[in-house]
Amino acid sequence: MAAGAGAEQLAARRADGVALGLVGRG
Image (cartoon, rainbow, N blue to C red):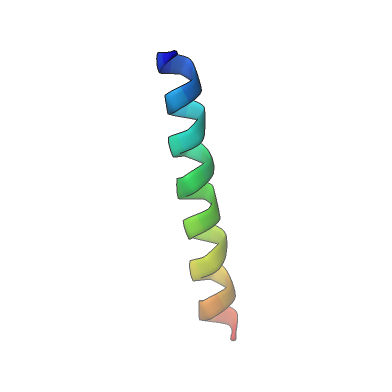
């Protein structure tokens, strides 16, 4: 299930990036 864990990590990083982008714009 390494691939699943990698996808989960990627999604988490993506969510963090979106949050940072929103904060930067706000």
